[in-house]
Length: 389
Image 1 (cartoon, rainbow, N blue to C red):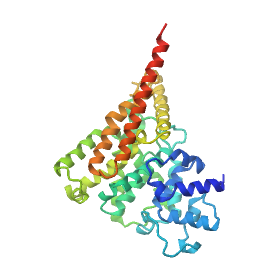
Image 2 (image 1 turned 90 degrees about the horizontal axis):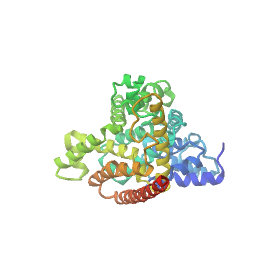
Image 3 (image 1 turned 180 degrees about the horizontal axis):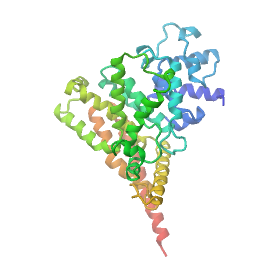
């Protein structure tokens, strides 16, 4: 379905470089505006920046439509009346790694199709949200820990693909049910291993015409592949506290120094790479840190998916996983615990590493925590009234 002129204007505004850097970016609004293809559009706007923004400017000048990103990204700005010296902010991966915007768009279309639209939470909208949030955190200061642009490229691609083929049931279910994927990966980062394997064996392996790494040298490709594997596997929540400890250890080793140059030199750059992996992980768990109504929508979606898993576990006589029992899980309590013990400490740790830009995010986390604490009081009052004879 073609986009209306109003939708095209909204899309151009939302996909501008300044808009993409906003913590309050509403991924659900974008999904609605672009007819349910948020990963295609957000991926094009970020991974093909500034070409994507220039292409939208060209479309605006010429009156062309932009509902098919790949169809308008081959021309240079000067071809459509823009000044030849027009410059925009962006990653410039198109030039740096010889990847055609049309190839990137075809890649993103295939990746988007690899997400299960029936999943309330682990779907293409979640992937688009994680990609945009990773981009925000890079712009907030994490990019200072990047040694070369190939790391940024790897990190952002990893964000786009990090949950492909997610079945809607987590690692706990896979292991307890002894599913084929759990047996294949020996109960270790089961889904994360599957996601990244799927990328290289099926998405790229079977379709060379969408190989966004085709312009890389063998050495660059090996580096990208290794980075994506490490980063996606580190999104496994089972690794959360271990990775927190590692970063705290690096901080202690450097006596709290936050100079990115020192981090890049620590353990041959491993410390700086860990920061970037941690950034993607935080983007993956950032829903409770977003403004309303986004954080509420994500809460309802994740609980819907969890409860469906719990129903399946009960039916199959498996242990019901944490937060998956619809009879006992409190909407408010689930968020309070996750924010207090996981999300807030993680972002506070990131603030120690990139202190200049975390204030807005931490303030939002505190505000959301207060919201859920008030919601819990209301839940308990309602429960008490129902329990009264």
